[in-house]
Length: 488
Image 1 (spheres, rainbow, N blue to C red):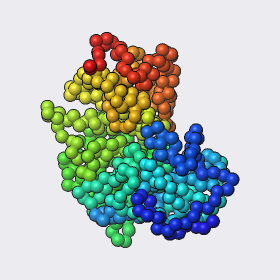
Image 2 (cartoon, one colour):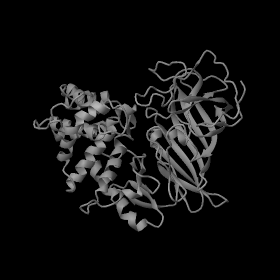
Image 3 (cartoon, rainbow, N blue to C red):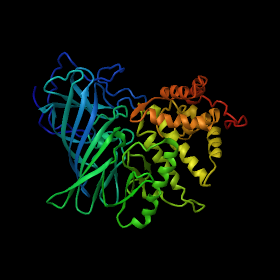
Image 4 (cartoon, helix red, strand yellow):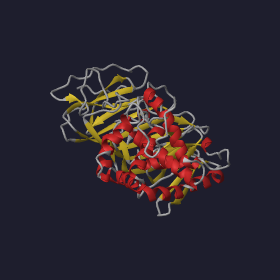
């Protein structure tokens, strides 16, 4: 085999030098279990993102070293991927978009690599010097570089602020714009990060800050560890002009927040509300599933996102509503709910996302109602009236045609609301609490939730009830509200 040493640009630019991929032996390029491979195909067969992710192996751990230069947006990086083969492999794929690859090793030996264009980004094929065997543990090290503002073939996860820095918003298919990875929610792993920030900037990442290492040029390497497994789409790295604010929850969980430099007085009281939000949700779901939490407020982002252990918010989010109330707290609760529903318990594929967003909308609505900011039943009635049209256009909550629609957000909450009315609040609370306990640190499907609900309630009639709500073309009758009708 000829080792490929020339730089390869992933993500729209031409290959620097063409090198033939060696012929395969008796083993095969990795394909996912249950996936019918076709020539040139890739991905794990996600219904909404068919080319996302790769099969044939499971990632155990990512170790990412990332050296970023603000203002110019250049970076150099190394990712070490510890994985285990789930079949015999002579080659395997990673997702990568927008990087220049300098070297690749597998099991400490130089490997060859090649670019295989995919519909949602780039498939990066690695051929080890020696084939991998089913069950074999192996480490892949990739040295690469790039620029945060370089063009990508797919959507980018890079978000840039006025400070010349960046924050990552990788959901749902953009983690590969930061590192070569297996970019599917079905393959969760633990993580360590080593993020370099120059003087005047701070680095952020998922998990706990272990220590900082100063360098001779005045920059600092920030070392983080996330000991609980995480899907790639929840990566939360950043280099910004920010200030860390610290606290603890009511039961002693470490809290760390990042707010813009010079605006500590403005945002300090806002992030301090997190302790009460945690207490409110822990009373419903049980213990928070990770070892740290916090909020990152950044002017380079325009929305809110549940990056695992470090939710990302726009600076524009935190405004009082028309009645002078801090209604933004419902969004803070929404993203915090996701730490249980979506981050700890993760969809096996993106068509299951209603059970990420439905609980987040449901409990945020309850929180707002308890504080007198809204009436949750009114929201659910309004959703019911329009959901038939949404089902027809965008698919029902359990079978969405795309992400981001009313069907998986308010529609997902409506499914839970109907279930709570059908079985009563006490049983509903038990279903939800036991769900996040039973499936902690794992992935789920809608079918698993249906079986779980039947198991907890010992009521087999809930199987067809939930199927009608999740997969039906029209709304079933709302329990307790026979007068609710779909809009004409």
